[in-house]
Length: 433
Figure 1 (spheres, rainbow, N blue to C red):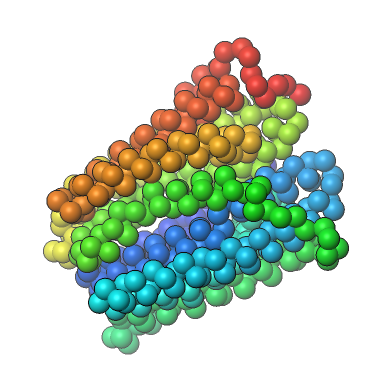
Figure 2 (cartoon, rainbow, N blue to C red):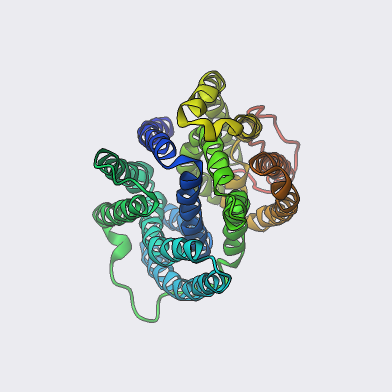
């Protein structure tokens, strides 16, 4: 069943990648490096705001739904879902206030165009993305990973592609019309995810007593910091390039990242299926089943990533050339990021394992120090080396993050997440069912 779901997800994400990649090429070619960099940075701002609202609570919800279903506690499922919605409403108001302050700061500094993009991204797009993630978390917790990805990986990229093609054919393509198309695509994706969640998991949305919902704030505090540092670590280079008004180099870095990130898609698809199953095995204290699942998944994703790596090595430079002369300097950042993502896939799903085993504080500690070092390296390298400096900082962060998590998983869970699948020594803290 895991294998079937994994390959269904891979098919869905492959379609999404094809659409997204084609759209990115068209946008990069039409907008140039500077315009493309502004669009990608706007998307990055919206993701940052949405993650600050979610605060990782969607992973917490997936884990608790999976655990409740394992023990047949359907009432708890409804309480967790209701509590999740109320928690996000409160967080949304707080982050909207923070976003407004950031927009005003850039307005006062004379950066009106940047302020406008941040306002659109954080105050319009982010709430839509939060709603989409809410519904996807419910579907994933009920082990409907394929349905849970339809909105984000089929509807959103498909609608965006259609809008970009229309803009291109009508010769009206520009940053703000494309952003409008992105907004329409996000609304449609969220609406469809809502319908799928309510039809597939009706018990999760049954009414609960007013006194029942829990205060999730203290429960998800670790997840909040975890996700905040994660998205900051993933997007800090693009956001810094945008804030420093180096739009052309932001576009080059974004193009290199999109090519290199093709490798990680396989791992992300596997993690979507893996998370609730690891949580259920952990609840049942089935240590051997967890190791078998981790090793099989790591080796399968690595095998699938090899031809992707070969394709990027063979055709990556030619693709950059097709985008225009502005993207020529992106080749060296591409090789650095590609090597880092190859290591990422080989390291497996250590982060997901630790979170599903209740060891999210250890993940947070690793993420904090890698993010701080990443920010420091970016602050030094980007002003001097631009996109190349961003790639060096990002690549080092990816390798350090994955190596630390894999060692932590082996030390504290006595499990090997990597493609090696080495048996841990005696003394497992997970026990055996």
